[in-house]
Image (tube, helix red, strand yellow):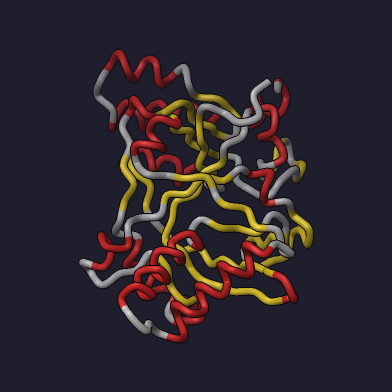
Length: 257
């Protein structure tokens, strides 16, 4: 059995979110606050413009679903859309770098980020080094740590490594043209969250009908609505018929895999 899948999945908690993604054939970027803990009980925080996905096979999905038949099983939504790894690679997505709290790699990265935001640059070489190094921070997450959902602590020792997350983070130079940033100081972001969120939402990560591996909904009652939406926004009949066969429910996954 494969450890990773040939598809990466974007999870969401609401059916309407899946419909909106399919209607626009795109994912809207959003900022996500990250806090990376490092050696000596030190940490650094930042907000990253991203779209995130998981790279896990069906057999391991059930722990991530929010619920089924009224039972709480996981921390993420019961809805998802899977895209091919080919699409992911074409669009520059990359697996997250997981950092153990006690690793020296985390300390080195923390010092680079702190230098970039607080000390300025002595010369062009240092400026280049700091800027390029901090790009790695956009793809980092602790191996294990506290998991918060909607501001509430759900697990104090959640193993993020099990998610095998992939991320799309836009090129900073593309955002800079419009005065936006792929990474923000977390305090700055939280002080004006609504404004920053509104600005980054205008950027999209596009996909086509050929890129979709499967669509996950919570139960069978939602499938007719989904089919009507797909029929409205995708007009290639042969491809649409194939796409209908790629619809699966979270309850099927939990019961059958």
